[in-house]
Image (cartoon, rainbow, N blue to C red):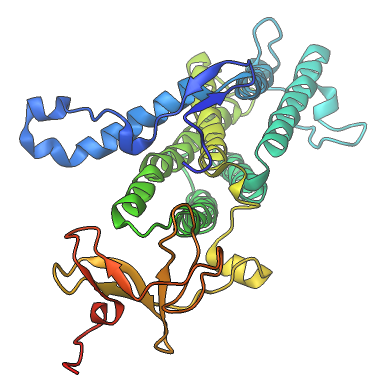
Length: 385
């Protein structure tokens, strides 16, 4: 995590201890079952770590977002005591805006609940937009993907009310196409943007002469469980869209309203909504205010936000062959970090540090074996004279 102190103050003025993923207790319970399961221990630990983060840092804003999303689902599907959905409605009327539209011809209470549901969903997305500014562009992509999937199932059920059984080829194609579009938006746009921003962030904010410190920064920014939640979100969204459309798709004369389908719609919709919040929240929480936006590397280059860094050859200790902090650019110039305590500057050997003005030394002490050797010996064979 970047910029996260050891203790954080939440919106309720509570102080919560911040634990890094690299310091989080490892769950070794799988080893009791079989030693072959040790490959899953890092994943289980990361899952437990994210659950810990949610319990510790989801406060008023996140609870409010959850409430609005849940009310949006319930109000939009409520039919007890009304009978509008179970009755099938009037399939001769359609549309939303005209005076004769089907939407305005429904029961007054159903209309009120539908409008309240719309208000809840607007509040849901508005709070996400306000509270997680660096994820705004990705929020739009994910919202677009969710709408496309729902429209795809509506279209499929309009052609084949019992979809996927007795479905036409075009119905199957429509669901496949919308899922491919959603897969592209989530996998190749949002997922790529978050991971590449994470990589740039770690390189810039957690770079350190000691490779062990840098490696710890990489571990602290693992996103395997976040990636898994993105996949789960698409799965639950498909189940929710199918069950919601399937429960009301037959014509009124053929409709046998299934309350179990509505329950599936509510449960899967709630899970999809909670995962959606986690997908938006976690990158914002992890990167904090250190990033202005989360974009892919190509998008950053096109927008001018990313300067493509020159590639360097890293030096290696001539004694133990471990990578050191010295680096050589394509012009053959060797850049060395400043040895002054507290200074993060660097420069060419013999010249002044760019940050503190101290002369850069011509020798490096290896952090692994402690050998003190000339900088030149860290790059290939050194001449005998």
